[in-house]
Length: 205
Image (cartoon, rainbow, N blue to C red; front, top):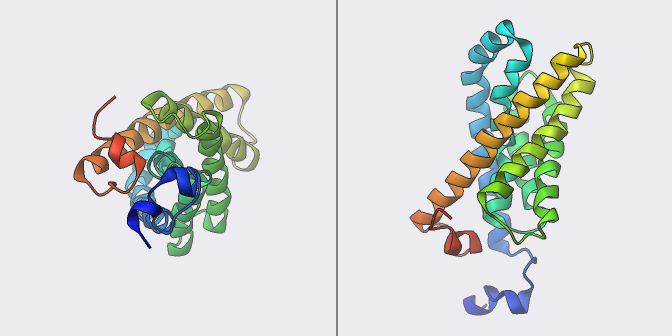
């Protein structure tokens, strides 16, 4: 197949998934999943410390779990990319083994949907830092609802509200800002040259 034809958005459709999109999204999901596994072990002690000080502070570490959806959307820039990458990323620790087991996939689905809805809101056309941060916030909000219903239903209302605040802040920084920086960094290496995110992502604007 002619490479110029496969890369031409006016012929194939801006939102049509290419084979390279699927492959890169899967690789990205696995890579983020490995980060999740490391984060689970590395952040466990710090999480316990924060929880002992004030339980809702644990949310300050939660943003890293939202990274896959934000990063997937920023790089692939196709409908479903945020959900796909976050779900693949969640599958890795679920298979390796963690304290949440298969329910990790529920979190991954909700987190991915949260980020996906923000990119949809901007018609998959705006990829600036504020949009990435907003995606991190909504992903955090979706995860917060799930955790409050399943894990922290017994918390006082003040704790629940405070947890939403810390989780949203972490989503802004660890998912939104860090995800945006990673996308820009990858673009500068040239590995994203076949993507719009690589061609437009070499400047910090």
